[in-house]
Image (tube, rainbow, N blue to C red; front, side, top):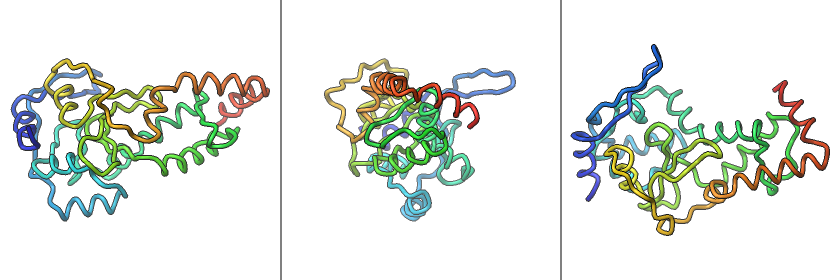
Length: 227
């Protein structure tokens, strides 16, 4: 199985979720809509503009065909603000958890009392770890290592879970409604993110305990109501 196979299967049988806002509801539609795949020049322009590199398997898939159904990133003609929002979502969702769940890692130093200052520190920290590249809705693939087979995750801040050990397994799970149990022993090891995914509860519990003991938790929550 390769990129061409999955492009054809998604085009014919892929189930896409279409969200409506008036009234708020969703429907399922069969068949992903594709445009002509991205060219080498387009890949270079996108990577230069947004400061990341497509991992090889995602690049291969997008070169065969560019999915443009709702929920996918339209790397060619989509609104720039939408693309930036999608690329920024991992940071934004973790900022939310900094404010409302007291998420913080000791290696970042003392947790600032200002929400804005805390998010600035978080941004600098995330600039040093593997980036997440959006695929569809809240599903992301790791940018590094620059090789095929990186895992796919569903990104919702601390509530982030694996959605496939690689791009192809993810497609099977998301679009073909094939129930699959992920073999976590086969998932490629990635820096930083797995630690957060596996230990988030212990991290915030320890942070709250430490802040409470230092008399800072109440003040932090009070300060951030103004942020």
